[in-house]
Image (cartoon, one colour):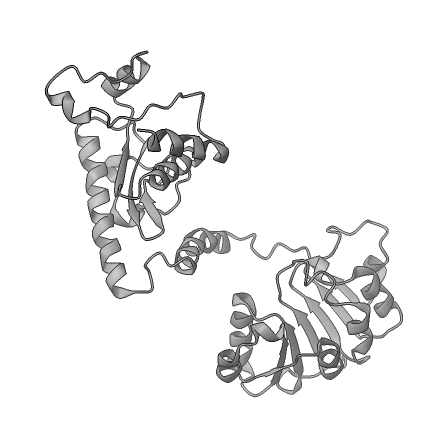
Amino acid sequence: WNCPGKPLTECKIAIVGLGMIAKEFIDEIRRIAPDTTILYHVPEIFRDMDAEGKFKLTYCQDLVHMASECDVMMPLCPLNKHTEHIISADVLNAMRPDAGLINMARGKVVDTDALTKALQENKLAYAILDTTYPEPLPEDHPLWEQSNCFILPHFATNTMAVRKALVEEIQPIVEEHFGLGRSDEKLRQQEQALRHDLAVAHQLTAKHNMDMLVWNHISARFQTGCLITPGRKLWNQIRPEDLVYSSTNVTADIIHSAIYDARPDIKAIIHLHTPAATAVSCLESGFVPMTQDAAYFYNKVAHYEWDGVSDDASEGPAITAAVRAM
C-alpha cells in the first residue's frame, strides 16, 4: 500500500494528440487539478493556441524532450501512418526512471518491443496498457510477466450506458462535423420544418395504405445530405425527431443518394412499392402514357434494369446514369 508516487497536483502530464478525447480528458483533469502542468505534442500545423489558453497547456514541438520532462506520458492520438510507433525507443529511453506510460490510444502507437525492453531495463517505472499490439498479446509474451506492466482488458465501452450514449451521440457529432445545419440557428429552424413535413408525409402515406410497414423510404434533401426514413419504425409512428441522415438500410442510402446526384433540382424522393407501381414496373414496355392524365409523365420516367437488391455502392453510378438519361 505504501508505494512511492506523486499526487496529481504535483505531476507533469504529457499528452500526445489534442483531439476530442484528449480535450475531454484534459477538462476532467482540470476539474480536480486546476494548476497541474500539462504538456502536449502534435505536429506544428495542428497546434491549438485556443486550447492552450482554455486548458493552460504547454506546447512541446519535440516529443523526445517532452518525454524527458514528464511524470506520466499518455498517447491519446489516432493510429495512422504518422503515429504508428510514435512512442518509440527514443521516446521511452528519454523518460525518467520514475515516470510512467499510460496508453489509452491504439496499441500500435507504442513500439511494443521497445516498451518491453525499457520496462525490463527499468528505464521507466511502469506502463498501464488499455491496448496492446498485437491484441491480445501472445500467451508467452514477456509483458504478461513484467511486474511493472499492467494490462487492462480494453472493454471500457462494454456497458449499457456507454453503448446507449454511443448510439445517441455519435450521429449528431458526425452531422455537426459535416455541416448539416445543427450549428446555425436559421438552418436549424429550416431543418425542424423539413423534419415536420417529412414526418407528416410518412403518416399520410401510411393512412392511405401505401406503406410497407417498416420498409421503403421517403427522403428530403437538406444541405449536403438528406433526411430519410429511420429503420425499424412503423410509418404511422414516425415523428420529426426520428428522421435520420443515414438509413439503417444500405439499399435506401444507395438509391436516394444516386438520384439526388443525378438531379440537383430534386428536393424529395418517395420510394414506394404500391401494387400499381409494382405492376407497371413488371411490364416489358414499362410505363406507357396512354391517357390524358398520364401525358404529364411523358419522357419523365426513367428506366433502370433491376438486377437484384441494391446493396452494393458500385450500383449507385448506374442508377445515376439511368436517371440522367431520362
